[in-house]
Amino acid sequence: MALIVQKFGGTSVGSPERIEAVADKVLRYRAQGHQLVVVVSAMSGETDRLIGLAKAITDRPPPRELDVLLSTGEQVTIALLVMALEKRGCPARSYTGSQVHILTDSAHNKARIQEIDDARVRADLDAGRVVVVAGFQGVDAEGNITTLGRGGSDTTAVALAAALKADECQIFTDVDGVYTTDPRVVPEARRLERITFEEMLEMASLGSKVLQIRSVEFAGKYNVPLRVLSSFEEGEGTLITYEDEQMENALISGIAFNRDEAKITVLGVPDQPGIAHRLLGAVADANIEVDMIIQNIAPDDQTTDFTFTVHRNDYDRALELVRRVAGEMGAREVSGDNRIVKISLVGVGMRSHAGIASTMFEALAREGINIRMISTSEIKISVVVDEKYLELGVRALHDAFHLDQAPQSA
Ligand code: ASP
Ligand code: MG
Image (cartoon, rainbow, N blue to C red):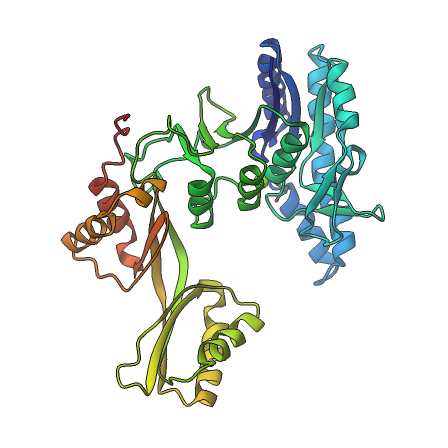
């Protein structure tokens, strides 16, 4: 018998029929003798609808009141799911975040979980009940309702699993696992049986939006085995866990890509201490996140060049700001391009294998794809290319690293 925390996202509870299907699924796990805590999101579209209501009243809803409003979405689904379970003869109870006592800080709309009091949940489990908890919400020390940021139900589930020392946290969603890359781009993309927390973080932050990033960080930190699986089909899904000897023996686990990139180049910046700070500090002060940064060596010892990438949504603002600061600094020229994308190879196997980068560059060269920027970290190599090459580049790399085939075991 295992203690399992299961999370069902908005699509999985998007209608009364789907909620009934979730109840059936939960009961199948229960019939295997498991103890179950179920975390649910709001019905699909509901959180957006509530935000729309708030916006119809005011452009700037007070964050505290927005949390009071948004938390109602999940309160609806917990009650409906328990009704469906009870109708099937399964004892169950629903709890809001504040009832379970998911204590958070007071950062409304993006609160962080600090502590979970598991006494109530344990008592119910011991009494043979299924416990259904509202995702995405908590309560601060003063008793104010808080929410955890969009997609926060994943984090609720992982945090509960950590607090309860659950055997596994299962995230049921509309995809049946984590893939080597987006199957819409590469039809041969393969579902991974396992992936490490580290790799998943890279895949998630690079745009494979399967899980909320924070939930993966949390799971890694507390070593909660996390499984992504389909609400609608049977299957093993993908297990996200620590690296171990049994792991698939792959060099590369997947290819992530991000279409929301833009780059800004500043040429001829007087090369003095403090220039990077002045330029990028101004960007950071404007709350614009910078991803890749490249500074050239100064060929003449006088001036240097910078190129960095930002989110496409921030491009216009960043460009205007950089033009101003660069002007003040006496830089020669500022240019930008918002039709670029980033493609990244991710894999813990890179640590122990040379030659991955050259295979990558070779594959791109064969397709005539010009690489505009390169950056590497321990388990990732990223390139920036023109957006028209995204699909071609991802397919070429998927092919070059044979990601359509399961790796041979050691
Ligand atoms: N209902 C919230 C949202 O739509 C939380 C979640 O779905 O995880 O973002
Ligand atoms: Mg969601």
